[in-house]
Amino acid sequence: MTNMRKVFICFFSMLLWFGLSGCAEAEPEQPENVEIHFFYNQPCASCDGTKELFEIVSEELDDVSELYPYMVSVYNVFRKEDAQIRDSELKKLGFQEELAGSLTYPIMTVNGNIYFGTDSIRSSIREAYLTAGEDLFVYGRGVYDPTKNETLKQQLEDYKLEKGSSSVVYFYRTVCEECIRTSGEVLDLFPEAVVVDGVSYPQQIIRINTRSGRNTEILQAFFEMYEVPLEDQMVPIVFTARGYLAGYEAISSGLYTEMEQGAGLGMKYPSEKGFFK
Image (cartoon, rainbow, N blue to C red):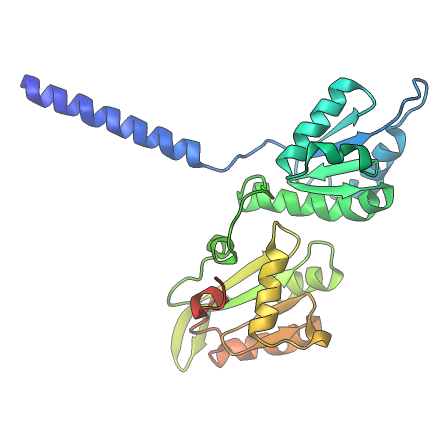
């Protein structure tokens, strides 16, 4: 082997190594657990400020705790060290440090979202945990960064439409009983392909959790583009190239027929029609 060829192979190997290293660095952060952080303010040395918080975790997550691994961390912000951890966490969420003194405690943060007060924590922790678990361990989207400035068009890049498919876009929430029923009794049973006018097309169902990241804004854009009246602005709801079906009854009774009639062909997102900037 000539010296020139040896140099070329070495140089090519270095380029490949740096390229792979760059790709690895670009991957989204993938923690091993859904991280649930609690911050409370308790100056009393003999008082337990964590008892109610762990009771909430036990009561709200007990029956779903095996779905995704999670870790609970608690911090008493009366202590300087824990207050510094709070400030660091708030900064990642886009909050200014000087606001810390006016916040309502206890505080919970889960996957880039923040909740204030016991009532809010109790009513939100189940959905926050399930949504974070989906994002991290089902779809691999990484930890949500609320400070990242993304357009709605960029957000929709996570939900790509497959060319040549019959596509339907489904909006849901993880704790919505009608959504759970719609997924289990309708969408999960959909065939892999649909026949329209004698031609078979792969059936694509795009599922968008409205509580993940800024997905509520995506749903609002669909409402506006399809001119959905207020009484139909709900979840579960599905959108096709021809219109929408809102609620379990409408979806279960009409969606498959719509697909067979070609409603899933030529599906376009609002961004592709110039709706988003």
